[in-house]
Each structure stands twice: as C-alpha cells, then as structure tokens.
Amino acid sequence: MGIKENYSGIQDKIPGARIIAVSKYVNSEKIIEAYQAGIKDFGENKIQDAEKKRAELPEEINKNINWHFLGHLQTNKVKKVAGNYEYIHSVDSFKLAESLSKEASSKGIKQKILLQVNIAEEKTKYGFKINEIKEIFKEILNLESLEIIGLMTMAPFTKDRGLQKSVFKGLKDLRNYLETEYKVNIPELSMGMSNDYTTACEEGSTMVRIGQAIFG
Image 1 (cartoon, helix red, strand yellow):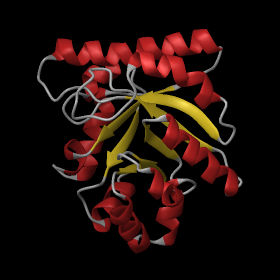
Image 2 (cartoon, helix red, strand yellow):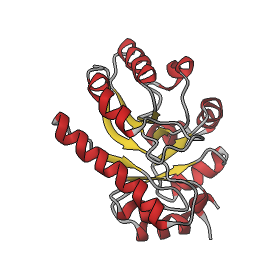
Image 3 (tube, rainbow, N blue to C red):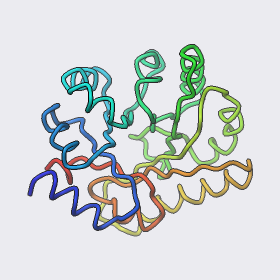
Image 4 (cartoon, one colour):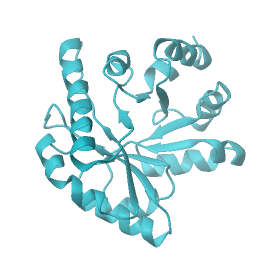
C-alpha cells in the first residue's frame, strides 16, 4: 500500500488523535507525497537533515506544515530549533528548557514544548524521571517564553501490551497529577509509535509519532 492508504488506515484505527508523520528516514519527495495525502504534521529528529529537506520543499508546503522536533536536543543547537518548529517534544532537562526560553525570548516568541519523561527509566533513553519532573515542574512553568502544552514518552520496544499500557498510563497519571497540583492545563500526551500507537491511544494519547507504518 502507498502513503495515502497507510495514512487512511491509521486514521480509521485512532480517530481523533493527531498523527505526526516521522519523516527522518525519507526524502523531501516523500514528504510532498504525504502532504498531498492530507498529512499536515511532520516530525524530524536531526536538525541538519531537516534543514536540507525543508529547503527542498515548495514554499507553500513548507509554510503549511506543522513541524515537530522529536530528537534529543543539545543546548548548543537551540538557536536552530526555537521558532523553527511549532512543537519541541524532547525537552528533557531544566538546562535545555532554560536555554530554549532564553532563545525564544530573544526572538520575541513563545515556544510550545512537551516535556520528555522516561517513564520506564530505560538507561538508553533520555527524559525526566517521574519524581524529578514533579520537583522541577514549577521552575519550568516559570520560564516565561515557554508554553508547556504536553508530556512525551516512549515505551520499551516490546510486544508486551501490558508493559506498553503501564508506561502510557504512567504518563497520563503524571499529567493528571501536574494539572491538579499546579492548577494548569496540559492538553497533549505525545505517546505511541508505529508498533504501539493503538495501545497508546487506548490510554489517552493525543499525538502519535508514526514513521514506518506511514512511509513503509
């Protein structure tokens, strides 16, 4: 099946969730094809690759895409990301949040971010621990040029649906705790990829990050 059919099939399975096409392994031609199939949200992991692809896109398409930055972000690359992506999903430290806020302030913008949480505490993945984010959330909330619109996590790569569900539920429970404790609205839960997006949506995901299941 092609991109259009793949996308349509995913939409049928998870009506209401925002589908972010993870385009890190495809070229600009595939992005154009996906855009023409109706996809408006695209996620990239590497700044240099993304810049090259975006420069190759027709201006009208580039302008109408909602760009999401999904990869691990180093503080020395903040200038290239703040303001150039509508959403940054991978804010995984206070130092990074502070750097993003300073850069956003210098550009006169408010940057939308999601805080990455390592619910399963895997050593190979980035992200705040649950207790860490509970302690530091207020400080991030006070960074004036950031808007915390959600939380993001990745489940371990496994076929164990029970483990997947526990990770996704853990993020939802954390969101509910932060909303109650700090009297804020955190509307987005970015969780679920090609292998587990239906399970993520059962647990309340509002944004799924899908590459292979769309592009093949």
